Amino acid sequence: MSQPMKNNKVYFRSFFNQLFYPCVLCRSHPRPPTGLLCTGCQQDMPFNQPACLGCSLPLEAQSATGLCGQCLKQAPLYNRVWSPWRYETPLPYLISRWKYQADFSAGRLLASLMLGAWQEAGLQPPEVLLPVPMHRQRLQQRGFNHSLWLAQYLSRHLQIKVDTHYLQRTQATATQQGLSARARRRNLRSAFALRGNPGYRHVAVIDDVMTTGATANAIAALLRSQQITRLQLWCLARTPHH
Image 1 (tube, rainbow, N blue to C red):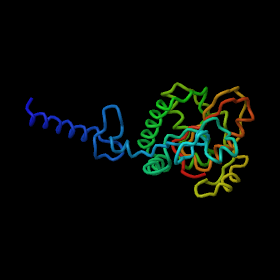
Image 2 (cartoon, rainbow, N blue to C red; image 1 turned 90 degrees about the horizontal axis):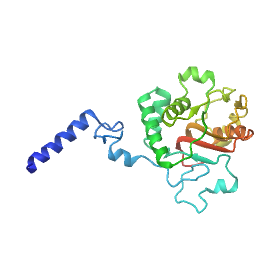
Image 3 (spheres, rainbow, N blue to C red; image 1 turned 90 degrees about the vertical axis):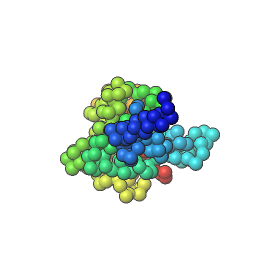
Image 4 (spheres, rainbow, N blue to C red; image 1 turned 120 degrees about the vertical axis):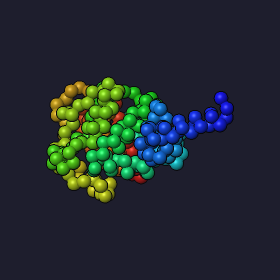
């Protein structure tokens, strides 16, 4: 094949892919056959590495222990907090569209990328996924529980069951957004409860973003009162500071 014909074939293939299989984020470049993002957007994703193994706090460099200063001072309640990305562009945009505008294409993108990151992370599968519950009043306002939606997506692909009855939201609290760490902890007092005791030993709590850890720790304190021996938290993104 002559060089001009070969160049034309490459050009038309690129044009076809860009037209019919564009990157789901920028919509201006073609994505690879087995991916959702173009090479540029994939490289621009704010991967959370290095990060504290205890609370997933982004670190400038990995410490010898793998833990941040706060987790060295006070042992974390979770055996492992895993969040594949830092809460930086484009995560706030995608998560906001999914949570507050019911843009499920953004949700599917995030869940699919999280699934791929999970498979690369080599995490030990738990017995059950526990989505952070939403009070019925908030559920009526929003229309869906994003943590449950994410847990169900992961469940279908990882073959891990989701339990929506064990962990309950018992109080309708004010939104956590914009509150200080102390105000978040105060806001969540007695907000959760456990129903029954199914005898789980290894569970993973599912949420979208970890900020101060107030929600995660309130749930962990309850779960640690049971016979659970291994407790994980999986979330899409982690904010840079406690």
